[in-house]
Image (cartoon, rainbow, N blue to C red; front, side, top):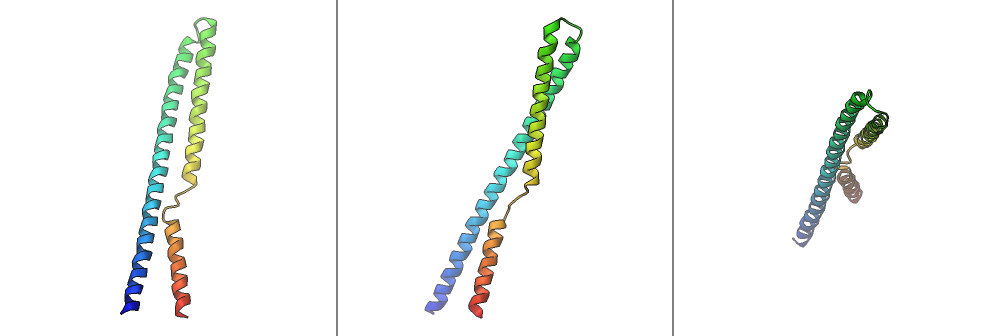
Length: 119
């Protein structure tokens, strides 16, 4: 009876640890997706500002000398920021999700240990 209680206690401890690990992985995935959304929104914002300043640039093209350079530089700045954010967003998406990888690795180790114990 004592060994059965120890076995159940061990199984409960293993299950608790795995559930805590699973919760941590879900939290990490949520944070990763939040970062991707924020980067995407910032890229869209920069693209919108770039288009706005490009329009101003074209409009001012026929005005006096120095307004042209300033609006052109602002357009280049915001389009550059858009490109940088798009590259960062693409890299974040390509890195993929590590969802449940640690849990699966721990379960595989548990399986190997249980199989070794039976031999």
